[in-house]
Image 1 (spheres, rainbow, N blue to C red):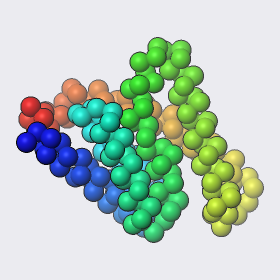
Image 2: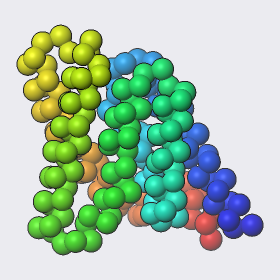
Image 3: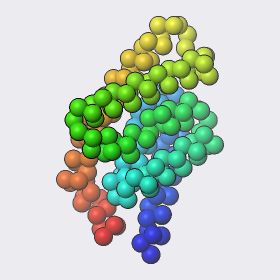
Image 4: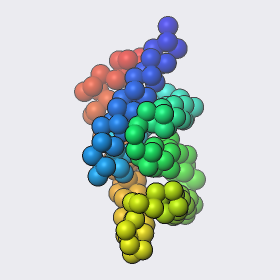
Length: 172
């Protein structure tokens, strides 16, 4: 019975993530913001059901995003940035200095991959070469804010939100 509840919860989170990505991809302005909102579902599953389920939700959402969402750029950015809530707790267990280095490596790697994919596969998105630098700077700043947002969300989630939404009763 508990396993069925967990799978149902994961399926709901995948569906919610895909809907968020789909709705935000229609505007074509909120690509990274839609990834942030969709990855909240990965965060919740990671907090409640641990890493394996969070990665499963991340992968299922990414695959469905590629299949269903008209903007493939949003799906690619989800694959690059959506895993962060699942790997953040693992990175932070390494200690403060190593954690800082690993987060920096992730930020730089994901940003470079994003810029390279946009440049080579979506050249119509870039009108000028200086725009690539702007994309890189915005992505780095966005990922730093992403990290801060998940740190605060985690504290708020465990301190108040989990009980207000009665998620704690679902897993008891």
